[in-house]
Length: 468
Image (cartoon, rainbow, N blue to C red; front, side, top):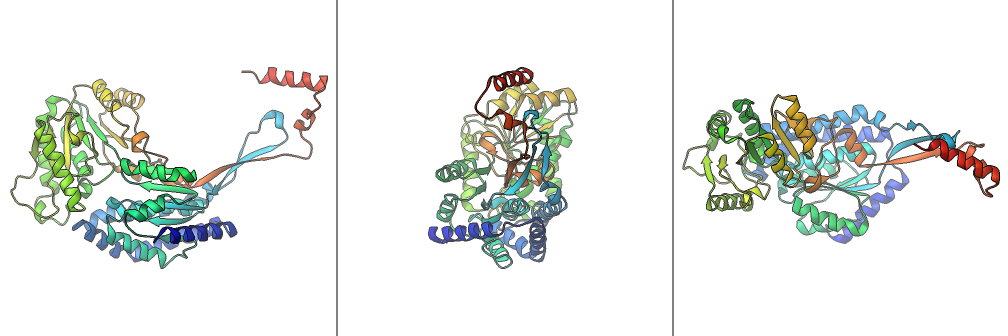
């Protein structure tokens, strides 16, 4: 789809929205339709994702994409009426007897740009929020995962009118044109580097943007915590989709004294998770050759700068697109793998001896999308929360905080801006519109010009009683 076609589509949506913004009943009907469409095409979506990666577990796609998406739709349908209600607030005393309230109203036609690593979820989850808020929407899935992009396009466009919801596909040039369209809101999921380009493209139109980016999400293990349990939970989250997850642990901080034990526990847990990894249908492949070569380059750079790379699977066997899990010790900030988001099954270990130095290290780095801390001590946990900043925090586990519908999900600083999921997603795609309703007779009528001596004394009195 070229620039002119995109603009015509957007104009058509905006025109349709102005004529009839979707009411709550219509939103509920269309959320139910989206749920039915996903369920009816579940196997097609799973198969398309498998083809995009060359191999990805059916169970991973079900557990990490289809199930969370359906659960999110269900959550929105249960709560949409209460989210959309008018909310009265206490009015200012000097404006009595007026009433004041706010209500959430849809923005119009919004653009949603999905991400290849979880194409189904990251294209359609923001759509759930957009529909719930009453918007029209155009979706652009990532061209890096073309099979799933085409299935999403077919199932959306054959079930919804284009003036309401439409999906477009295409290469990076289409994505560039898409981000420059005058949407009423633009939602992007992807890398920090591309996020900067998206924001720049949206700026001339003053299009508000939500950027769901990545970054280097650390896991800090306190010496008192079980290395076995920490290793299990870190590696479970890390190896979902072969590390190609925005909230996967990007590096681990632990005291030097835990190195040997942590390595031992990680090796055992990887063998338990994937006893025959080269023949496993449950261990995903790297999305394409370019990304595979990028990961190899990160390892070569680290090795050349003194890192110790630990293969967690001892084998000389090679399978196309399969990268075995690795730990990396003796890392330094000069290494590329400590500067870039890894997005693969490589886990660097940073040795810091206490919580204070760990907090300092995290704070000297760009703000991460997620921060994981393994400890049972409430005082230390509260200290971490007080002195660090990240998109989200999960204590004693990894990844799963993003499935909490009543918590906002989103980054801060280099890891993004804005939130979605549940009510926060509904708010992102809404205008919180302020309304004041004045009565026929109002106190403010007595303060119109001319300002007589009586009015001057009244204003002076009002100022004296409102002073803090």
